[in-house]
Image (cartoon, rainbow, N blue to C red):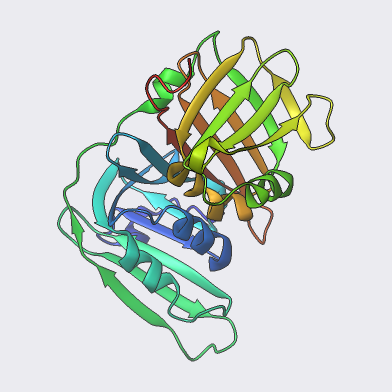
Length: 276
């Protein structure tokens, strides 16, 4: 990562970030485009883009400074933007491999996106995305710390296959995580209470880590769980975390072309009184 000491090289810009290959970044953006608006936050810790839908689901894309080829930020910057516009800008050259540079000057200014396709050095395109004030996202992470947390890590392709095979018309998903058998179980509840379930033992080869201290049973709206499908399709591994009341975090790890890691987190609120 290039991080120049001479901040004057960046002129009036408060944030400059360059990614050498747009593919993984683009896939991560697409995976959280389930609402019109998102909040972009950038600090010394990296870049976060958060999207919420009511108070039932939240998704955050996180890129640490090491995921960038070039990363510069002055203070803490935060603004809202239209997610579909950002996605469209990153797709200007379709599937062609590009590097992408993001630049932001100050509150009220546009976020500039410049794409440089590798297959034609004489071509580039610049987009200016209007920014706006935006409310701070809910901090669910504070609720997923402490001794009552169940945590398992599963290989991404295996978990995606499980979700792909489950009943697509189901109304609800039920998750069980437990120190006892079945350890990890996903059940879909469909029309007329038809059920389909998959169990994964803690000794399964798809299980990378298993740390469950209590049995947690919770149900979630199917459409909320399905929103994680795009991210899961590109994930190398997935952490599934849940606390005693069933607040669910799906923490997905994507690997870029240079082996850098990009993270996408989904926080999903359980249905109230859904389990007797």
